[in-house]
Image (cartoon, rainbow, N blue to C red; front, side, top):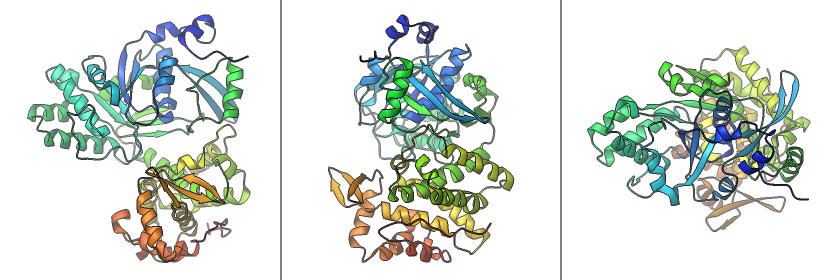
Length: 498
């Protein structure tokens, strides 16, 4: 017997699942969100939903689907309801619970519903914008903000804010709080500078620019929660049977959650959903949170994902279940990355955070696919790990051998063997895998023209346009990378000194 699909009607028939769902579905729209990804649904939207259920924020989210891939059918069929399975270990106890998220009011496709999206700018209650468009999404491009829609996310946001400015005559009260969650340093600051540049390029006037500068608040923020991509079929079936219904939007996350937002009392008053959960931190300076997460959790993911994948592993949990790999990951994080964080961090705090991250990697409920971590591999390597590498060499001239091993695995992973329909594929043990990285064409050209893997490493390491520095100049690093440029990546058995 097939299970019924999650919907408001299903909740009407089974009020015990969510007794107050109709009142939650009637809340007004207060947030516009650029992105439908699992990270947004598993963290910001989770906090908003939790606050609504506590009667604190009392507002819903209009979601803008910005990319051309996929569709919004599942959101429409389920009227944007979705299940969120939270599984892991907290305070030494196992957690396995599922919540129904009612925070999203509707999902609009930018390519089809741009006029309707701009109408949202006329809503006086809608004062918050959040986004997650991957690390490469916040870029200044030669965009046309008068297009329907503009191509880039910053272009879309500029057009939206300009529509709001016109709708309310540039009143101070109509200004917005904008919180990007893309994992780049100073994401709010960078987004603000691009929006101002787009306003200037399109000659939108001094009054609009002044309104942007004085009445809108672009907050730097950091998100930290492991929310893997689409759950595997086995997990979906088990959770669906337990719940008694089918959910095509089901997401799974770990228990741990953090959304650190740079802001003051005004920001805190607008983002009132922060009161519902201690995982939302609003402080004047969030650099410490960002550096710990970016360098240890994300940096370790980036340096180990390719290596583990080329070992034939599929998930982070499988990697942690392999003793040699688990030792590599632990030593990389605690012995090489933690001492080289390019920020003043108490060593004990870094070590404690690192051990906490390792416990999260061991979460038995999370199937975090390694191949998903390699998306935009090059941009992640540059942003997450190169600053740590440079700081390492400020501390010592000794080459970081585990870092070099991970970097070599990255170079090996980024070897396309098939180019089809603007997509690139590598191959391992006779099986193709997708290289979802904007630098795939670059590596395709480099690998084709390189005389050998050693030559490839030499060329890429010296590319200052790619890394903003010549990595060949770092004592011993190039040699350590080249030693690992082999077709089959073996587990490194050398354990660095403490």
